[in-house]
Image (cartoon, one colour):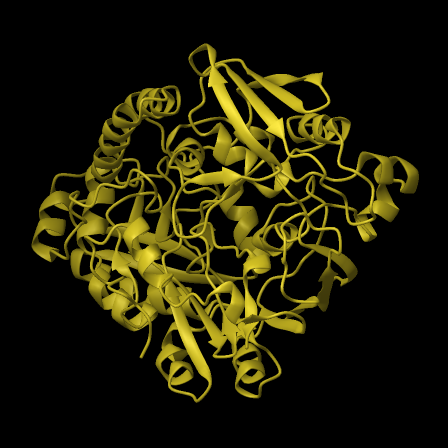
Length: 518
């Protein structure tokens, strides 16, 4: 039976669903140390250094190689101590003092020093080095080291999400000495970190081979001697690998195949919450999409339950937000129901009461997006909207999208996720308009929304943040910058030989906790 644990129930919170999925854990003494974990992945590890970590391919791999000051916790949306064993927050949220764990060594045996920590933190916030992630760190003023055990982080202004930011791969601690000695290129091929695994070989486009870090500071971890990530972009190729026993875990099970794979002997399918969203992205400055009633009409004319059943095999839930389901998601906010009459009524209030032509970009080879576009083509025709599906090479679609030369665009399901469980990242890049992100390409701009987003990240009062993010959710649904479809789960095929497998809400895994069962 597929382990959905009530994920189709909209009222189930992200945390509750994650905890329910954690019930299959095995005790530490039930784990057999040793062996090689073979994982079939659908994304490439283009880079294994933390200052070049854009994309889920590198991110999910780098988490296994480097410690961060704090770590995202399995089963919750909190952070836990990492290389920092404790910390204090003072000056009303403007000073963070981290106490660095002592006795930790890099994979080459060198000690992790406070100099290493500060060097990496300085690089993390330097846009010249960390251009991919520095947009999340504008409120960090800098770092000080009053002694060899302490790192002090000074803030320009309060940022309630900063601990989550430090848990990202960009905050990974690499060896400064090794980098200086080896040089950037050699280090990028053979990096030195203090995480549970170290790189044996990164054959970009083929596989990433990791081996156990013999100096890892967590006693008894990791269990595996080695881990191999094999790149298999083709869905059927990944499923064949786990069916044949050549893989122990296969990432991104096609939704339609989930029941079949789950029914095979020795294999289970794990369906878990994920900070992901599936929407139709609209250019809010292209006429007539610059009219709110038009965007609302498209939302009402969208059969979300049908899309969930056809595209996601019933494993998702209708989306009641314009960003992912995160820490402060409000389950009581209604999603747009399928209501053709309401859609016609709203369109009748617009400049195009009889409908309009709508080109929709779809990336070639993206079958699920193509199917979604075809469903919408048939449904939106009922209100006079003539969808012209334009299937182009993925790079061409991206060029048109980011240049603003489009009206509507699909994203591959599960392509848009949040790297942290906090609402702040997606709220900032998608809802708080900036010249850099332009509403993540939608050109959505609202002064009221921008004020709310800034206020929500600028207070450490949890109740106040919840109230503000609930306001943000309601306003986003009203303004309808996108056509919200489905909150999609992550679906993974796991051999019954594997114990303690769990996906964090951010999508990655803590492989040091996973093992072969005795």
